Amino acid sequence: MTAPFTFRRAVPADFDELWPILHEVFESGESYPHAPGTTKEEGYRYWIETPTVAIVAILDGRIAGTYYLRPNQVGLGSHVANAGYMVASWARGKGVGRALCLHSIEEAPRHGFKALQFNLVVASNAPAVHLWTSCGFTIIGTIPKAFDHKRLGLTDAYIMHRFV
Image (tube, rainbow, N blue to C red; front, side):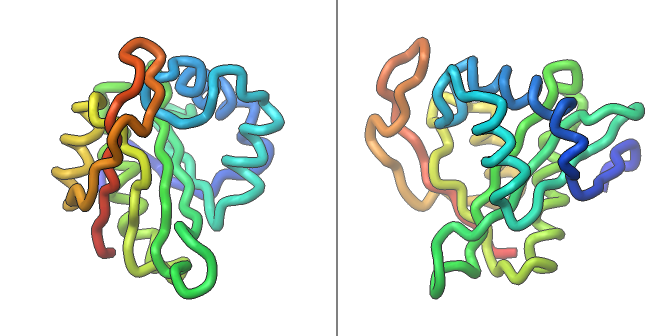
């Protein structure tokens, strides 16, 4: 793991610092399925209340990024986790995304998960596709025109998977 990052479980008190990160990504309409206009309360429910675990990465005393893990399906499919990752704009280009991904691969088995699956990786998000493949994920499917990109319109999305 990259040395300068400290990881810990997110707590409700973190959300005031997390919300600007989530809000910026949601509003961009370029990489996350949440609609621009998602409220702070909706973001809180999604990121803090409902995941199996949410983690924050601390860099220089600030939250630099975050991820969550949750079952991708119920019941007999619940051993495969879905995950979401976000990096603060001030921390981009510092290896936070990679550190979050590698940490989630280590963390997932602690919560009973055997694999990670990303259901909607926007095909035009080349940096994310490159990062996930470099961390051992493979594209197992393409969903045509699955994402309504704010600038590009209907865009393909990938389903990506890896065992942990």
